[in-house]
Length: 216
Image 1 (tube, rainbow, N blue to C red):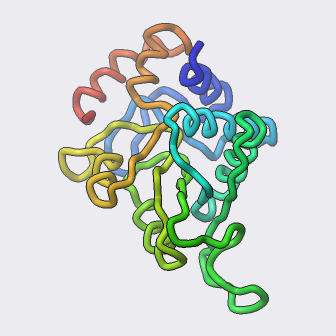
Image 2: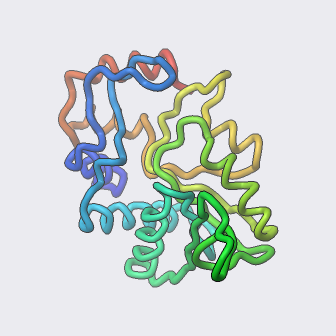
């Protein structure tokens, strides 16, 4: 079993990936839903960090610091940094932003590693829907230093059209030149259903139809 198949199993076991009929924020009726809020234990977070680390390692993404956008990205960046050290002997820094700059003590917008010009930064987040997290993170990072954002790692690329004919992942690549590395894609999930890696074969026709209608 590949780490991608293992991750899809893990999402299913955690209740993060479910199948049925779901109305998305966009108004689309989707046959599957991803709720990353269902990762709730230390053991789950440890395993999740290992999958992020595997994605970074497999894609040879250059990294010195992992950045987790507040708030959901904070534990993800910590877990991924820990896993990179434990699994691959790759010791990297991490940092995250505050929602509001601190005006006392050490002050500033960031906690953790102090960013420097040319530093290779990878952004860690959960699921990209519109690219909002990246669009908000880039000016914050660049205001701290002229860092080199070498990539963004997310759990799932839904491979859906955004407002136009391209996906959010493709849009941010065109806008910022940042490559987004998903641990898995919708195509991977469809393949996992088809190959009976996870249950849900009764939803395969709906998954294929949704992919045909909204996919890129």
